[in-house]
Each structure stands twice: as structure tokens, then as C-alpha cells.
Length: 214
Ligand code: SIN
Ligand code: FE2
Image (tube, rainbow, N blue to C red):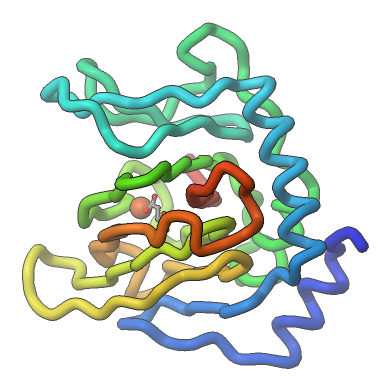
């Protein structure tokens, strides 16, 4: 069974998200069939726009590999962090798949369409340090994140650096909304539990983040 808009709407109607310092965590938002369907969409994105391993502006390789769909992708290299309208190899990014868009429509509470679906690929040992998503023009729109594959330990802090943080293990099919007071909260992934999920034969974690950029 493929994931549909009505599945997503039903999940929102029937449940309530957990609150993690203002971040809304929809546990088990996508069932196994919906996760597999989404994986097909992500594999198509990766064929059209092969993932790259970004380097920080200081030249340090990140442990996460990235690609994107939508009008914009997000890259980091010696020139800095930024949204760009083409893959480093030169082609425009593939379109955001309708199934991904349906998740946004169900949980974002935002009238605008997502302009970027960043695809983060976590292999064994990959992590993402605490950061804010602040390269977007309109902080009234949330960032929506979808987790697939191995569990990842997600940490949410504050809008300023430092202070208390709270963590939760995100599992395959979980959806997180960073909006409202959590829109500019620092967040990151401390580690993944490699091969904790059967979704990806090769192991690893995939995270999609949907953003309005302009
Ligand atoms: C991100 O902040 O871009 C990724 C978050 C995640 O992997 O869950
Ligand atoms: Fe982020």
C-alpha cells in the first residue's frame, strides 16, 4: 500500500505528537509500507542527483553525505554554507516527490510549499553536530524532518548556544516538526544505532528535511 495524503491526515487526526522543547515528534508516522515507498522515491532522487560528502567552510569533511530535491539544495564547501539551485555537477535538483509533499501538507501547518528537501545519509559512525537551520528567509515556516532506517539520537537545545538539551531516539517512520518556538532551536544527531533497522539492507539512516527557503 502506498502512502497517501489521506493516510497522513488520518495519523494527524488520531494522534498527538510528543513535545521535545517545542519540537513536535510524530512517532511511527509512516508505517512499514509507507517507509518502503518513500525509500523508492529517495533512491530515484539519488540516481538523478548523486549524494556528495560536503566539507565545512574550513575544509573538514562532514560525516553525513547529502543530496536534495526541490528548487533548492543545500551545500557546504570551501565557499561556505548556502542554498543552490543546481547539483554540484550542474543539473537542477529533481522535483520533491508527491509522497514527501503529502507529509509536509499533513504536519507543517504552513500554507507555503516546501522548496527544498534535503536528503542526509548517515553511514556507520556518522553524526551531525548541534546547529540551527537559519539559512532560510521566512522563519514563520517550520522545518519538517522524516527519519528512515537506523535509529538516530536526536538532541534539541535552545535558540541560543548552551543550556539544557533533551534527546530522543528517532526511529524509522518518525516525523519531527521544528516550528514555532523551536524553529531556531539548536539540534543535532549524536549518533546512530547502526543496523538497528531492517529497512536498509546495507544499514544506515536517511533523514529528509523539508524547508521553505525564500
Ligand atoms: C538536520 O538537522 O539537518 C538533520 C536532522 C536529522 O538528521 O534528524
Ligand atoms: Fe538541521
